[in-house]
Amino acid sequence: MKSLRHAVAIAVPALLAVGAAAAFTVLATARRVVTPSARRTDTHILAVDTGAQTIELDRTLDTELPGRYGLFTTGTYGYVKIGAVLSADVRTVRRKLLTQIEAGSQVDRDAAFSGWYYTTPSELHLPWESVLIGSPAGPCPAWFFPGSSDTWVIQVHGRGATRSECLRAVPVFHAMGHPTLVVSYRNDGEAPRSHGGTYALGASEWRDVDAAIGHALRHGAQRVVLMGWSMGGALALQTAVSSGHRSRISALVLDSPVVDWRTVLRFQAREQGLREPIPALAMGVLENTMMARLSGAEGAIEFDRLDMVARASELEAPILILHSDDDGFVPSDASHALAAARPDLVTMPAFSGARHTKLWNYDQTGWTAAITDWMDAQGLVPTAR
Image (cartoon, rainbow, N blue to C red; front, side):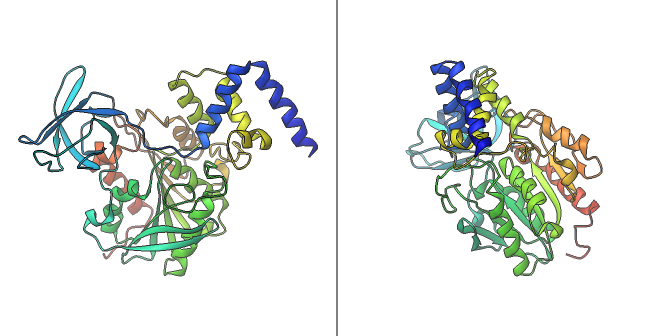
């Protein structure tokens, strides 16, 4: 109690010292960090040619990327798949439609560019079933794709996403014979909501991943590989150092992972035009029990415990990191730092040009080969499939 009073005594004057307006910005920033957010519109559909089956979008760093992607929109279609860039100028980009849009269909202007590509497991044309995983948060829905190996892959999606984000990787592991469990976790919109309904950035969500490991072990798995996307990478890393099943974790595959939240939040604050000391104070708020609750968090978030570069010595399983140096949302700095801190465990092939969690879309061949070759090198590809 004394230490709490001391922390509050420091945090409150620090906020007051920057002024009321800045203090409001600090608390609002802290709230955004822990609050699950709705999908954000980030481009506009300018034209659809149903004859040529093409679509014209605002040109952004995402919409100009080569490869296959998707658009969340409204109207006749909720999700539209798009392919190759056909032409572009300084303001617009025209791409091939991979979803057939019929004449007379309504496609609203506002859209969100997506790397998911697949939205439902049936699109993969593989056997699958829905299962429920009993976790401390309650029953968490998951998709299970069977395979012949006794090493299961457990996939964990990122912040503001759902299980669909992970579907791109299922065929890669299926081809190796690995059963795959694609899981949800508290407050992601599919799994149960916690009391406060906010993220703990992996500090509590990892327990839902741990429950998925327990489920796999009870249903025939001897070992597991954890694959985490973005914040799902943070959950996978926390599970790897905290789980009572850690001896059964054979490997981690991380796509665009959050390795250190401080690095990510400082970067994102700069992208939003927020300068120090705002991000530092916002993280200070979240580290303080009383102030964290003012921001909507359920409890204090210990950023030291979430810094996996600082905790690198605790890691035991080999790790493959797939992270573009042009990520634009979760910088690759901490991933490189972890690779430098644990060269005995971490493999990090060079990728550039792609954006956040879009390596599969940008370079499916290179991304798939990186995973398959590395899994083979770890002895995790069955010899007879």
